[in-house]
Amino acid sequence: MSEITTVPEQLSGPPDQPARKLRGNLGVASIVFMVVAAAAPLGVIGGVVPLGLASGNGAGFPATFVISTLILLLFSVGFTAMTPFVTEAGAFFSYVRQSLGFPTGIGIAFVAIVTYVAIEAGVYGLIGPAGIGVVELLGGPTLPWWLFAAAAFVVTTYLGYRNIELSSKVLAVLLTAEIAIIAVLDAVIVARGGAHGLSAGIVTPDAVFSGSLGIGLLFAIISYVGFEATAIFRDEARDPERTIPRATYLALVLIGVFYTVTSWALISGWGDEAAVAQATDAGGTFLGDTAARYIGVFGADLITVLYFTSLFACILAFHNVVSRYVFALSQRNVLPESLSRPHPKHGSPHKASLWISGFVAVSVLLAVLFDLDPAGQFYTWFAGATTVGVVILMIATSVAVLVFFARDRRGHSVWRVWIAPAAGLLGLLTALALILSNLSDLVGGSGVLAWVIVSLLAAAFVAGAAIGARVGREGAQAVRPADR
Image 1 (spheres, rainbow, N blue to C red):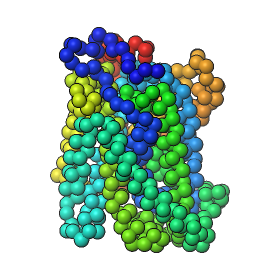
Image 2 (tube, one colour):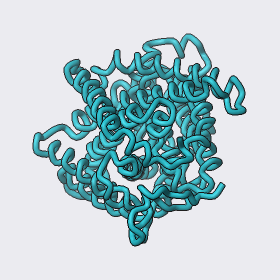
Image 3 (tube, rainbow, N blue to C red):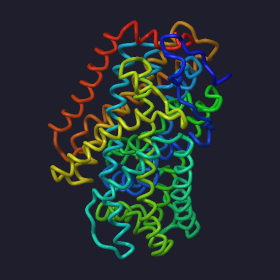
Image 4 (cartoon, helix red, strand yellow):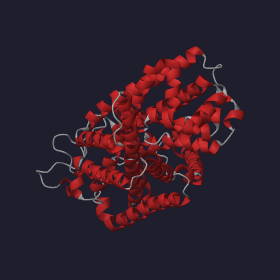
């Protein structure tokens, strides 16, 4: 199907103005790099996995990645089935708008913006300390964390302004490097047979259901944030009706296999009980300590550097995602129309990108002014909002898929449009219940802060739905005829 789509008069504007549509030629590999980079695999292995081992189900923790992957694959079955019928970029909100109406879709879009801005801003709280670690590793002085955050911000803003293909090339290089070093570590551990033989916890029911499976599953679900963003690049994808589904499945499988195998290898590297003890006592250096043990000090030092670049890749990927949400909303006349004018040369959402950079800059500045701990407070609070937000987005999309195919399966099997989406929805609802019941622990033990986060997301939805209802017909008319 051709990528060129007729634009109605109300969208086309004067002849001398560019069409309100992004341009690009992204293939499956480029989108996969973008999405997997957003998941920050090295950041997950170095940060989330030790937490899952210590607070979750110990040596059985790798099994929670298998469970999470299955839930999200079930979600993706219906998500990709509906993709050919949603011919506008906009990811989740486009699916919800198509099925549940314009106001509901705009409400979900506002939740998405808050969710992704939160994770982009929050990761600056991690990249600052990571930068300090790199400089100290090279023998340099201890510098303020915000200097590294500022440097990353400048580069992100520049790349966000340019064509998406430049960002995809940068992410491809960084992602390849971080996955390669972890793959080497995994291979060495397995080749040596681990510390006391390879761990069997992943297939042992007593281990999988030990400790707190719920908290383990919670940390596992957090690790996949970003995989769902494939559809936001629709207008910049080559043959999107094939590219988007393939990229979605491939990204999800790659992330799931990587997390499962690596967490299992790290446990094997210490032994079941010793791995849990090490993660509990020295979680912050768990990955580096394991690397030093199996691939030497040089390997551990290299991981320190790649951890920094992994966080930058995460920031850049989410910046590209949320910029395109803003661009899509401005196409609907929900946000200022000027934000939906792509750059005449790069075809990028340059104004939307700068708009998001402004919000992120304010967030980081406030963190500095209020002297928040960059990781323990700034990142943790924002990550809590993201975790709740992204699961809500997927739940809403699952409902949209079920409603869309309720009366007409459009040639698909019952499994693809009814059973699989319903099973995925059940899994996501269970995950949301676990997250909400443990949210105060995720945000530093503050029940008040946990409810503030939930209230913020609820307020975003209400505000978006109200604006969507007010825009009403005008916004609906701004959607291409093929979408209605």
